[in-house]
Image 1 (tube, rainbow, N blue to C red):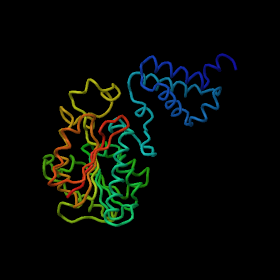
Image 2: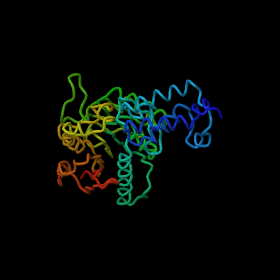
Image 3: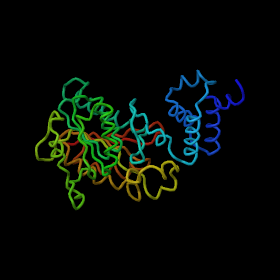
Length: 330
């Protein structure tokens, strides 16, 4: 191989990309350089490492260099490739949605475990396909939680809400990609508030079943006009405090949507409304599962008062941080 060909090889391009990202102090710079090269070439990791001498076409090399420069400048890898894996599924991501994080998979795990335990207590089989259940995902973003649960619970129907119309468009495309769109109704609203021309009416739970009824053929069961019609509510709400903004990585602070990041000055201000509304919307023995910020538990757990909630549990993430709070409606 001559010198010019060697400079165009997969090995040389990857080595150059890694060096540039390392010099720019990009986290996980080797992985980022690999993912961007895989994206440009449309190949998998096994192929590029088994063809290190393969020449990259000039157009692809130029595109790769441009993506490396953008990553070095702080743009998230997921925004450059347009995708992120979550729960073993590939999701489209854009700057309009929060990039799915591995720790959010614990919301799925806890929700499924709590449903299974409820089945056992009722004397039924632990395994359930979700038949007859109506589940709400609040602040759905990319739709990753609702879609992952829809894959695990093929008999369940879903409502997914978000304040951002742009985010709901992304979520809708992801639902179609994973063949669950027929079972998920997307609603533009704040938390569980009623949508109105004048804005959300805080404290007034949205009659989500009315939105579902607009596409009722997509669901196995649509409840009537009363609170207490949801079987499970899951949410990864905005929980970063604005006072913490300066401590965030620049990839997060400068490129992910503020509406999906910040939950108020302290970060936990949204949970009070969300828990109160969930109490109105869940059926007896309905389950609430919430993702928490790193310091949110002391302020949020007391909101689950014993007169309304039971079987409260806290699940830590791999770093030992309280990450998921779950409870059952009395």
